[in-house]
Length: 78
Image 1 (cartoon, helix red, strand yellow):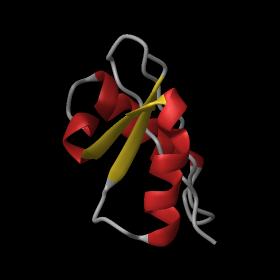
Image 2: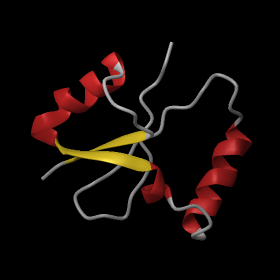
Image 3: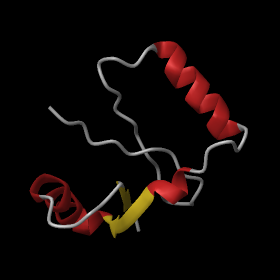
Image 4: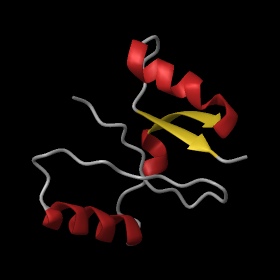
C-alpha cells in the first residue's frame, strides 16, 4: 500500500499534507518539522509536478499509472 505524500510549502495558496509510513515514529516527524522550520530542508526541490486543483485527476493518474517519473506532485488551489 502506498500513501500520497504531499509536504508543506510556503507558497501562497498551496499546502501539503504528509502521510507517513507505518515505521515512522512521532519523534521522526518532530525532527523533520523542526528542520523544515529552521530552513534545513527545502521541500520545493522534491516537487517535480504542480497542478491546479481542477487537474487533480491528472496528478493522481501519474502516480497510479506511473506514466512519468516523479518525486512529489503538488496540487495548488488556484
